[in-house]
Image (tube, rainbow, N blue to C red; front, side, top):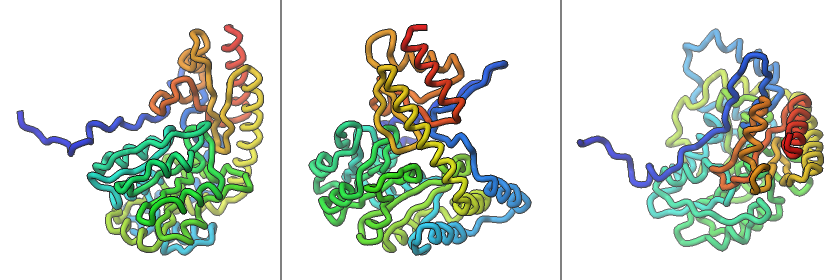
Amino acid sequence: MSRPVPNPGILDIAPYTPGKSPVPEPGRKVFKLSANETPFGPSPKAMEVYRQVAAHLEDYPEGTSRVLREAVGRAFGLDPDRIICGAGSDELLNLLAHTYLSHGDEAISTTHGFLVYPIATMANGATNVVAPEKNFTADVDAILKLVSPRTKLVWLANPNNPTGTYLPFDEVKRLRAGLPPHVLLVLDAAYSDYVSRNDYEIGIELVATTENTVMTHTFSKIHGLAALRVGWMFGPAHIVDAVNRIRGPFNVSTPAMLAAVAALEDTAHQQMSKTHTEKWRNWLTEEIGKLGLKVTPSVANFVLIHFPPDKGRTSTEADAFLTQRGLVLRALNNYGLPHALRMTIGTEEANRLVLQALRDFMAGK
């Protein structure tokens, strides 16, 4: 039988697997802590703008997301002409791969890097090269060691998902300095809004001072607009020009665009979410550690919990135990972390319930 055949390598790509969504049951409260969604939802100002836009859904969006680019420019002190908006930062990552990768090329990501990186790489016929991490953290020397004449792009989530670790700015600069000039460094800053470290920088300085670095960001995390799919990228003018040539002309909807502007301007909502996250991230790390479980130090809105591989206390058994109580965390087999679960920082109620459930689980109740 004759039928269309996918391009070489497409069927070798493992599909992206999102965190499971809870199945509601009568009489049981369920907490979804598997997708790093904010427990507070979006800014009320963003929701009001979204409702207002509903009266004009027959109109096409403004094709360049000008209003949102200008709002991002004001918030971060950037030139709006060097910003591209996308349907989530995922679209922008895929556009970068499509623009700069082809058959025979290589792109480097790290052992537990975001799963979109190898998908975007392989979808364009390039080879995904994996650099080992050190203590669940990107290792600059390991990345540089793997650079070859075929390397065209390096993916770096900073902070990283799903580990929650980060590279200090000095290390990111060392990475950039060690890469050949033709290699594009992509800094994915999806979780940067949760970081409060003096040695961290979102990536803007490197983008502003080099010709071969871009930084992507999203409105899906602290801004709570995951359902609207909206993100942005800051890059050198020549990269922005190249990507714009293949970007869809109406890739960000008007409701998403205007809600994102309102969310960006509601700094009080952002600060409230960040303060809550820091408080409960520290509390969970300390309290879960007291149960004999290891928690990787995180600067994001989630924690990575490691379970012993011995029967009776495995991550698989913990996942089933927690799910029975309506607490849905993220299993990480597809990230090469079969003995760990990732937990989004939730409401106070959810966080306390998870701790109690883990306490009972470890006690064999």
